[in-house]
Amino acid sequence: MLTFTIVKPDAVAAGHAGRILADLEGRGFRIRAMRMVRMTRREAEGFYAVHRERPFFGELTEFMSSGPAIVAVLERDDAAVAALRVAMGATNPADAEEGSIRARFGGSIGQNAIHGSDSEANAAIEIAYFFPAVELV
Image (cartoon, rainbow, N blue to C red; front, side, top):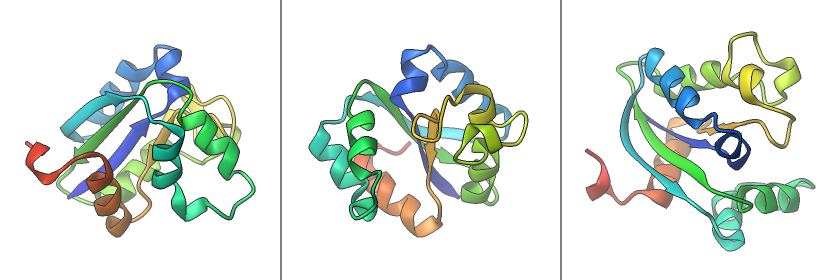
């Protein structure tokens, strides 16, 4: 099963990307595709279009286009989406379970180190946004 993740600009800038990716591999994920990107504001707005009407949309898209991020397709034999959600922890790092990625590396609700798909359907959409099928190995 596949899912999608982004190591966000805050985590990349702080030098945590390698530890986050190693954590995911340690939890049984295999990296199927990965690259560093610097989203434009327009690309961030397209990716997060589902949140367009939310009050945090502008802040979110500004942050996601503020610096390099790592986008990746992850594979796992079972429940990839659910397992990634557990690995990430709660959106607010202060509420995230000890040992989760957001508890260890997140700084705030807005800058919380990692994005992960919330469903298999959204994983497919998010993967296609950054990776044409021919890029998956």
